[in-house]
Length: 448
Image 1 (cartoon, rainbow, N blue to C red):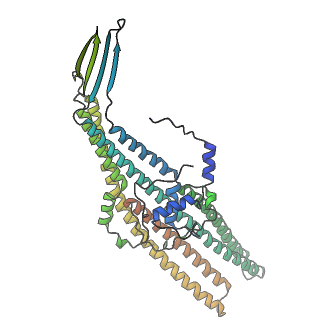
Image 2: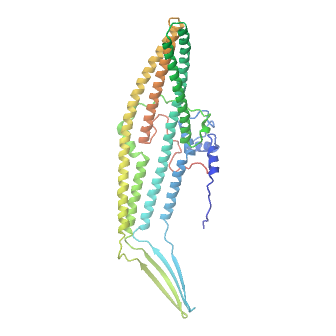
Image 3: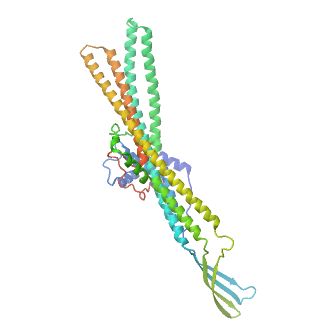
């Protein structure tokens, strides 16, 4: 016999536990070892790559806790669906005569396969909940990828703008000296000051964006921003997204139709609706109650065998059948809509990715040209052929081109992320789902 176990919620304690979360959590290490299939050489890592941060999100993110709870509910519903009805026992004492006593024992029997249809519906709902859990895990993984990309791009943008601001400060000092000597006008010197002010404003905005990106990354993982203060991120192949030629449209479309977890979940939900309809049709046929009876009356005993069933005279379960038919139609429409959306998103994402790769190639070419020019000017300055202003101009031109290339890299990686979401499959070489990442193994962390 199971007893009630209280589980009160303590908001202050849960908030304190959230603030105390850390990437050095020993439980996270055990979780990562399980999913990676081997023990990590260093813990915590000196630098965190995408896979390690994704594992941290699978461990900490509370959205997965909600999805796991739904799986637990579906598993319990499967137990409920398979339960057989209990027999009933009745006793009727004689009043006022003590010599009249009746015992009845009734065994209910379900007909027309009702229990089988209930189990089929519950099994399909349970599998759908498992796919929904895996879908949530992919969504969390995708959010970590996007937030990590934004964070790295924001930090690199800050570095480039700081270098540009430093160069423009050098220009301002030089222009002020030249204006004092009358070599340039004050208007020309003021123009240099304005460019420096613009650089400082851009730098301030970039620093704010970097702080926001780091906070967004912490939220995607499921930890407080303070837990990421001293964390270094690593994305070695960020500038080298895979060529579009390795992703043919037929393969992309097939992966979107077959591999997507929401498509598979919708298919299971349709199967559950189909089983529900069969159950409601089966309920047109009444269940049967059979049981022996015993009656004691005036020192005499009587044994009987009872038989009872509901007579479907006024209702043939028409309402529930109609509701189940409508539910099946809705489940079919949802499945077709999700499938069509998956196909269109995959094709659109591939087209966007191809365009982003073309823009990236142009930005890389431009950056190479400005880099070569900057080197040439620097050599000329060293040889005394050109002065400091020419080198500063070349330096700023090179930094602007580097920012343009960084923006193109970010655009290409975001497009690649959208394509991965459409297919729900990693596409970057070396990027793969953890070895232990199966639907059944998404167990999560211990309760805090």
